[in-house]
Image (cartoon, rainbow, N blue to C red; front, side, top):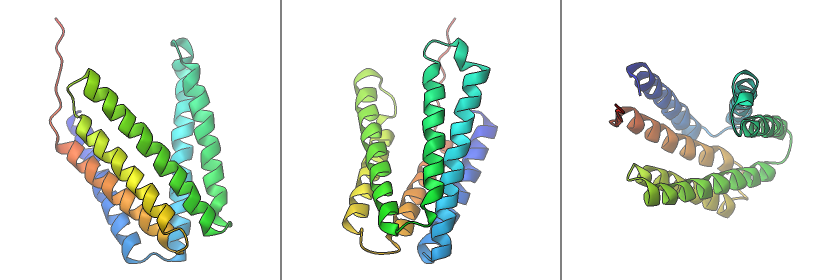
Length: 178
């Protein structure tokens, strides 16, 4: 990671932490709409980035069509997320349960694979996966409360900010091939 990437990661982590603390302190309906807008915009940007990457480079790579499919699915997920502003909040909570549970399972499986194959930082991935599973479980338990979606999203955002800041200060190993 270059110095610019470390600095950018640190700034993004601090901004994420500030936004998460603001949402935890005041979980209002405006914060609910902001969370949905941020999730939708973030997913749309990521999906468009994958589609753009496919058309510029990945179509010439082995397995490049996966990037196109992934971009289209994520863009559809962004459109679904953007349309959740008018539905009852229980559907948003179910959506958060599914997203956090799926993400947690994937991270735990990746960490177990990294533990078997590489002696790298698998503990951070494992803790991130377990945290996502705990967020999914807490979202499922407190599904009847109205402001639960904001608080659970804020806790996940706070944890991601802490992980991003820790990753900015972590030493990276370089492999030199001669």
